[in-house]
Length: 482
Ligand SMILES: NC(=O)c1ccc[n+]([C@@H]2O[C@H](COP(=O)([O-])OP(=O)(O)OC[C@H]3O[C@@H](n4cnc5c(N)ncnc54)[C@H](O)[C@@H]3O)[C@@H](O)[C@H]2O)c1
Image 1 (spheres, helix red, strand yellow):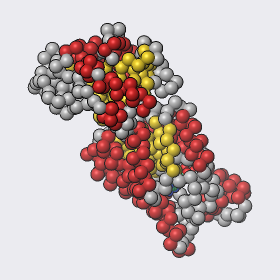
Image 2 (cartoon, helix red, strand yellow; image 1 turned 120 degrees about the vertical axis):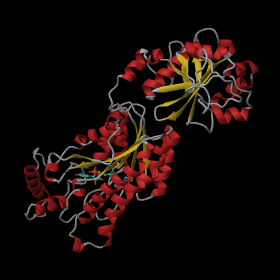
Image 3 (cartoon, protein in one colour; image 1 turned 45 degrees about the vertical axis):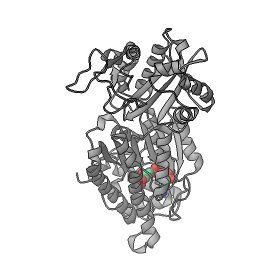
Image 4 (cartoon, protein in one colour; image 1 turned 60 degrees about the vertical axis):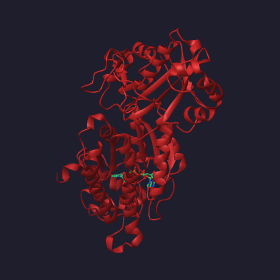
């Protein structure tokens, strides 16, 4: 059953729509009504409590939904993520709507949504143990009781009665009820169970330098694999020392369009990776909007060329500050949210120039070698939190960063030639010498050929890969030691 175009979740006979402020009068009435509250299993709530809990400040950590039957509100549901791929739900029908199968229908729709759209592997619910009717209803919806090790629960009902009830579920020390294996084998969840380890459905990815080039390709590939993507970029000048035009706001919008074309959510974040406060605010925003972060690609970078002895301080520091410190800032700002999520993926963008020296490129090369050291150190720090940290190592990629006179001149000088200063002539000379050097015979690699490496490192397939660098170089890696 497809979800509704308005963002609702469609069952056979019910539709679940986001509960908003406009539903407050109705919800306030319900949560004050003793009959409704009895079925729900809590205590009557004031209008202020309902406003804060069900339409207000707990959103979006707790997602509140109104259950409709033919556009008439018949119940309330909620879900909250409690881990990378799991969380709890609750659902209560208005007494006047009970006994018509609407509750099980809405529960099935919600569970399907959580498994297949958000990618949850485990859904828990925590009914009041003294409410056998609620326990029966959840069993009907495909849940089975689970007890604590050594303390099996009796007949599907929690063995011990708990005192106060904390919503949303599950509560530590409580007796969660989770879907039975049979529920997991419903057609939709079977599909989920057999999906590829490269599937990123339900994951939230953040990509820096997302406006164009490798960042855009990676953002789109992550979305194609199922992830929602927040794209961060400065979309403006980074340093006056660059010989190429900066990215513009329209570039970031274009990335957003391409992400959305895959049916995934998109969030544009305008920030400078040198500004850690701005990065922290951006991270908070992603968490507030989407509930957490699973994958971060710290990719934003710049490049300029000058012989070392001709460099002024800015020639040296602009690339070190931006590429190395900016990448470290990104890990420092976003990493804590991955820890809070219970694990995740940090991926940084280095370069083959982070594996060998670069004529006229001391600052860039040093920044990219530094990123390898940063990545390996972070992998040691963060493994204990279930976070992998890896680098991608692109070769020479066909992006704005490489397609300009300074870079052609550097490539020609590197091969022992003399650049003419004529852009199109130097481009041709650089292209033929670069293509001759690469085993796979291309001068520049399409950024779309780098993106699958990012998807791999972001996926479950790479869950045991950490502290390593994955190269996409058209064969240039063959000239690099180990
Ligand atoms: N193109 C290549 O040949 C190549 C090779 C190896 C590594 N890399 C690395 O790949 C990454 C992406 O490069 P690209 O080739 O796609 O270049 P690009 O210029 O097309 O894209 C880089 C993006 O990063 C953004 N950015 C730069 N500094 C920023 C900052 N301070 N804050 C926020 N955003 C910022 C830019 O606005 C731009 O949109 C860089 O780290 C680069 O060093 C590129």
